[in-house]
Each structure stands twice: as structure tokens, then as C-alpha cells.
Image (cartoon, rainbow, N blue to C red; front, side, top):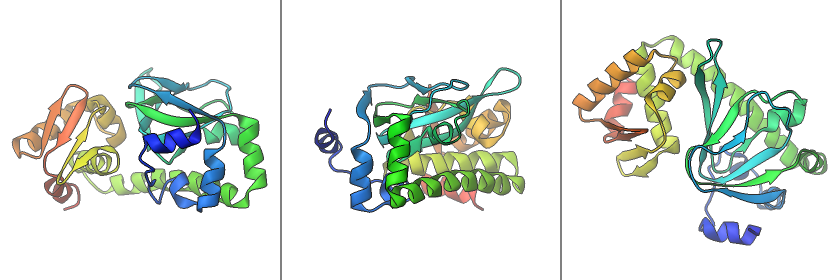
Length: 235
């Protein structure tokens, strides 16, 4: 698919200001959108990057969302982060030539650009604006991880669960007024994001259901009252 077709398919959408594509000038954005090859993943569960592999390509997300997961010491899986349209994934290995630190899979339909390592580095060398934006994006991810640890350190588990659920619903859910549908989030993944045990997450969700704030279904959570959930998350 040519770039023009991708833009048309997305309705010439605007990416969030905090994302890589949303943070650069139109010229730099055009340069990024010319990199690599356009790819489409039609559904959830497609693996883009696998933890531990030695690949060095990067993926520029144009539309849709992906999740980054890591293997825990006991062999389980922890949800580390979520990335969506406008974001860059895979840049850590491209820059430091280390094995992949996480597995990245699609949460649903995704449109992206697959960029080879050498082409990505050439772009960084040739455009100071793109290089600065990528550095800023990396720092932003590290700051967010640190802020989450600090934010969670002073609150109980039900509050942490409510905060994560609210943040995911606002940033990555299908918003409709005061409602948001998260179509790909499982309760174990919510537990790993919140750093909570699954039984505690189940109990918290039960309380939120009883209060009319959420509806839980298989592999999805619907927030029925975003304002009410925010009040619980940030009392």
C-alpha cells in the first residue's frame, strides 16, 4: 500500500501530540511516513516483535494498538506497556543492538510501516528533528515507567487498578461520550499493569460492576462511567 492510500484509509487522521508522529513538523512527519514498507495486520494476536530475538527493525504505528509483554521469572507473562497510532516500537534494539526486551503483539487491526534498521539509522543521521523526536520518545517512555512506580507507591491495590483502567480506557479504548470500550484487555493483563494479584483485580472489578461503572466480558472491559471511575482512581 502506498503512503497516500494509508492516509486515505485513515481519514487523514491526526496523531496524539505526545506520539512520535504527532510531535514533529509536517516535513519530518512526511519523511517518517516515507520510510520502510506499509504493512497491515487484520486482527489481534499477530506478533510483530518477539522477546529475545536479535532483529533490529522498527515499526511506526499508523493506526491501531499493540501491547508489549515480557516473560516473568516464573515463566508467566507480564503486560509492560501499550502503544498506539503515532508511536514507534522496536527502537531500543535498533539503537543499542541488544536482544529484544519484549514481545509486541497486535490488540486488533493495525496499520504500520516496517522500517529496516539501516534505513532507520540513516534517517536519524540525516534529520536532527527526527533524531531529537526519537530521543524524546525514548525518554518519555522511561519517565512514564518511573512515574507509574511513584504514582503506585502511595496507593492501595484497588486504587491502582482503577487508575490503570481509567488511563487505558481514555488513551486506548473506543470512546463514546462518558463510555469507553477496551476490546482486547484481559483481567490477567490488567493485573500485570497494575502490579496486583489477579484475585484482587477480580474483587475490584466486581465492586466497580456493582457500582455500575464497568461491564466485563471475555477479553474486554467496558467503562460505563468514565467520570465515576476517575473519581475512584483519583480521590
